[in-house]
Length: 594
Image (cartoon, rainbow, N blue to C red; front, side, top):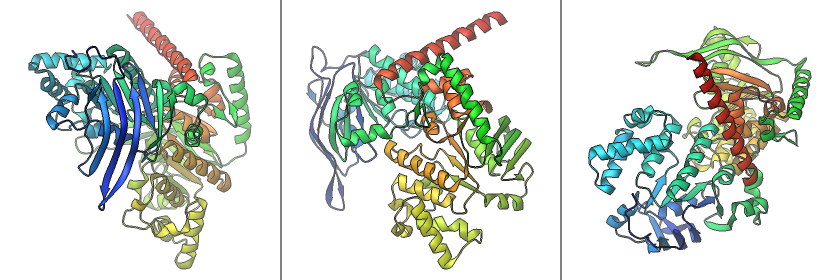
């Protein structure tokens, strides 16, 4: 389908970027976002541009297509297949977008138009660039939706973006991006908001499409595991400058710059239990030594828990979401049984929609218990009234996923931290001021920050404020709902280290909810795995990672990317073998049933 000029007979790098600089006009001053960047990408290869928020990776990549706001200034040279595209007229640049360079954005819900069906948006792209008839464009759109492995292409074609799951929306956006067989695919954090299993599927899809279309990929990410899984070469950016470059194998094996070393050290690695490294890839194959060590971990866990006081206990609990407007009531969690003891950190893991957050909300009385018994810090909240819940809430703290939306933008952070103490009647006046200062010290924030507003703090600092507020009443139970998923990898590492230290010092029990097993592994004594509203497996961290019994748990562990290219290749093969074995088993069951 590539009928575009410029690539025929061209043998050089597909994309050449020379001295690319991006500045933004702020208060009559030019603020640099990217400084004299130089890199190139060859056809069929993937180049990863990595760095934290504010490093300039997204701004410099969006500059290639003129997608920056009006206050931006772009200088330098960008050549696509030998042709200069920087400074093209709007009409010429529009022809480049989509047909020669396509973008997969970080958040498909904001990139796709909510008032048009997915099929209409793909058809529109095809008709603009190729002048197809509506029937030809529809046939091609369905072919593309099938190519990105959507389970029901026709249903996805007729669906609006909000009717698809996060992974399905990302696949639909990829289908639209590749509709014109682009030479270069810019993937801007394409898997950040996705579950690890969906992320693994999207990376497999991008790898397959790259080889099938001979396209180049410019991968923008802060996830070093994703880089190890997909990229051939890497460029590390910090504060608008390239600080290191090379092949993925070379940089991962021997990073030269201190910042690259810091990024790699900050990545949580699955299998780090008590300072001991577990080979989770070998564990997936049912290695007998792994099973033996898992049994030892289970015995040690039982001994550790004996004599401890239960802080949160679910006995055959079912949780319903009540009817809301036209949306009927439905059961989100069923037959949930688990206990969290004093001083214990339990990780609750599973994909989106598995019921993790529902369990967390029910544990603090925000959702009613439909069946079974739930006890929190010694109180039965199964049929709790408002007075009892108010009493329970003094002993329970909660850290939310997005600190920006959970902090009041009109209150200085000192007031946000002190508010629980004031409402509970625990402190006021000077005593309150002193307690707020102590909490700021505990989360390692300067005391002077108490007068700042949330918008004046970074994401990591806001999350620290959220933790300080949750610990204000010295709770016996802390519920942390995806507290690090929106943070850069190095900020995530410091927040996790902070939580670990505070839990060790204060001795509270913690229910840590996450879809990232590697993050849970750094904190948790025990792991509970949820799938479709049911607990499928639970046990000591070492036990679950060494010898997962359920196929779903094995699939979850296999999908976690490792920041090591060689090991990641082995894990990818192990995951493919797992999926193949599952498919064969399902087929055999279907044949028996027939």
